[in-house]
Length: 152
Image (tube, rainbow, N blue to C red; front, side, top):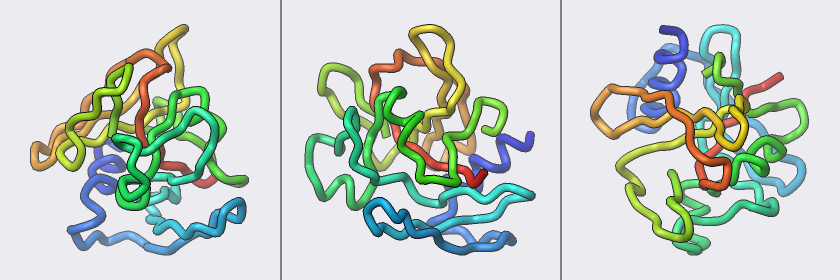
């Protein structure tokens, strides 16, 4: 249930007034500022990460999509992408690209990697706009998905 509340809050943050503390963090690696939200004892990024690292890219290879939606990361890159003092959430803490380059569901669904892997696959969360459902699934680590970091 806690996972459902956290991911629901993250997914709805842009249009819903929440009773949680909001703030921001500056990624010193590139100077970008991200909104944050405190949910319970955890502080989460309330926006998708947009740190340019190898094995990350923009939806449809368009820079404006990175600015609006953040970058997509292969799991290996996602596990290294969070700034110092932050981490990729585990499956317990708990955008997308279908190889080779078919992008879909932009603006309608959200896909977020977790730090928990399972051999050649890793766990992720999927949310659908307006459905209220959060799905827990695995996909190949080569797929591109969004990243939301959690403060250590």
